[in-house]
Image (cartoon, rainbow, N blue to C red; front, side):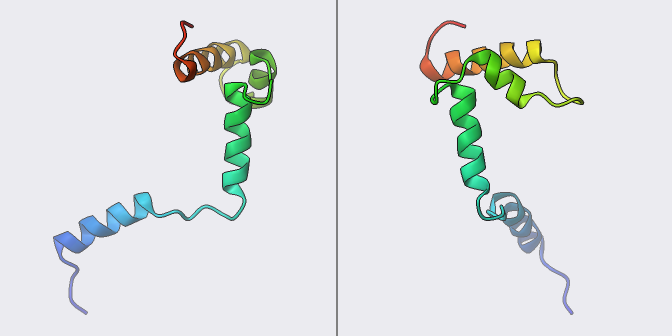
Length: 79
C-alpha cells in the first residue's frame, strides 16, 4: 500500500477537526446549556453557575464571574 501524501495527511487532519461526529441529541444538550448560560431561559447567573459546577472544575464564584462576562459580551453590555 502506498504511503499517503503530505496533502492527504493534512486533509485527514482537517477532516478530523471539522467533522461532526457528535452523538445524536448532543446539539440539543449544548443548546440548552447555552440558553441557561446566557440567561435566555430566565436562569440567574448564580443558578447557571451552580448547574455548571463540577467538583474538579472552577469554583462557583469563578463560574459566576465567567458567566457574567460571557453574558455581557453576548449582549454588548459592561460586565
